[in-house]
Length: 153
Image 1 (cartoon, rainbow, N blue to C red):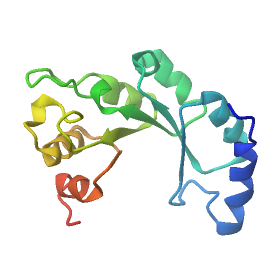
Image 2 (image 1 turned 120 degrees about the vertical axis):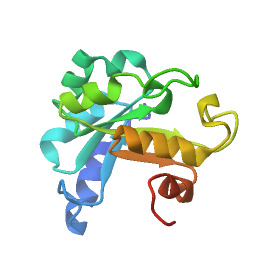
Image 3 (image 1 turned 90 degrees about the horizontal axis):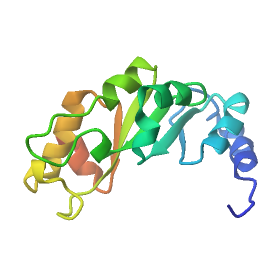
């Protein structure tokens, strides 16, 4: 924490650009739940709690996140294990049950980041996540994500 008033700066910049609305093309993402809790009463922009910690994706934790955020950004291995034969976890279903959208992150095509279950094909990863019903994905190569969801880059 550098002590910078980031929440106040965000709150100043959004309204003049008509971005302070749940329909605006804006997601405010943070690993810091305190920051998101501060923002919630001050903005209608969509808030996303980022996590790579399994304790944040239990049904109870997801219900708590839903009190201040619109979505949860989940590190991909928490949604789909790396092993080829492993089934998806219940995180997506549990988050949707709590009223949260789910964004998978960060999809990367390099072998050290791509799970063995995708046999070196980053488009297969995006395809599986889309088929499971994630609400969003972000990654280093958007063209591959678009191909994975069946759209032209």
